[in-house]
Image (tube, rainbow, N blue to C red):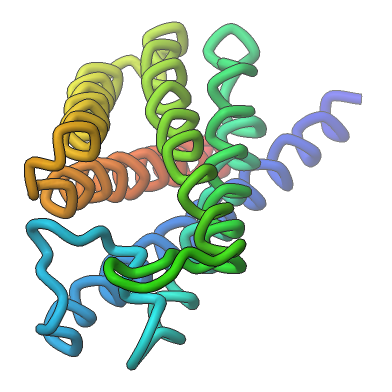
Length: 219
């Protein structure tokens, strides 16, 4: 029985390692695509305009693929954390909210935003309603997941960096919301700060998830 349990644990750890690599690849593609679009679409102001506007017009397919890549990476991370964390360190609500972010990103891909100055469309309205809820789900999810890392000995060293990044995500989300409400012209910048913090959090979380799984397979 011990041999069977060890084999099962080994197989699960190897699967988590593979899932972590999917997360890293997906997030890197997302970040690279958006970074590239800043040069391909100089007509869009990154300070005031959200990244979703890259999906409309030239090179829109690149932003759509970035949406898909982020969604795939998000679902992979949710699965990896569910498998790789002990129950006491696993935030069910946090993982559910992070999964909701993955769904919301797919919605953003299917229903593109209405750029400024064009008539409103049904797709744009759906995007506008879904967007804030999607970012709110992600923000709360990241905070809840990060708080629980301290409950696992293997994750405790990563707890503080994850918590700091989650607070940066929160600050970026609040800044994005305030920019939208006040029409201050900094919505694009605030959103990009949020996404940069999220990308960093996901990459470091996936890297730590993989390192924990590597230790498990070697033990």
